Image (cartoon, rainbow over all chains, first blue to last red; front, side, top):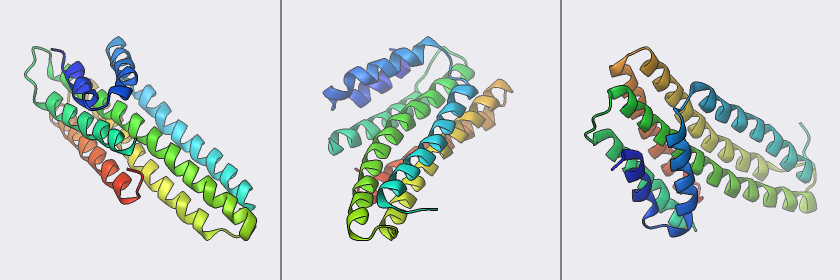
Length: 65
Length: 136
């Protein structure tokens, strides 16, 4: 059996609700090789998310700076 | 919800361990790339889940501050610090994955394996941080 599928099935066994998203992960994992750009994009997303969320939270609390 | 997510995190970590040890006809480059993708996908799930919980937690604190002490909110600063720490672990894994991918491209088998192992170790750190902060 494919090692990625084995890993995903191992993770999914106790969590039926997560199965569909994990299968999607498997499909995307099989479609193409992971690239440096793809991973870098995730880092960039986290950085942007942090700035946006902090700004939103601070605005609600009335905190500036 | 928390227990099932914990199971996913553990399951995928165990899955990655299987990936590392499974005998395969593929080249070491293919095996290493698959393991790195496993670390990457697991981190995406763990980071997404943790961020949902932590952002909601910080928003609640922000709303309370807005009513009780507008303009000053040390609890929010503390909450954001915790949120950033978990994000720091996630970006750490991603950096290891990037370095591992580059090592694969350069044909550096030993370095690639080391970065892959570091990425997996850092996944355990994420899991530990999630438990310590009560996200899991």
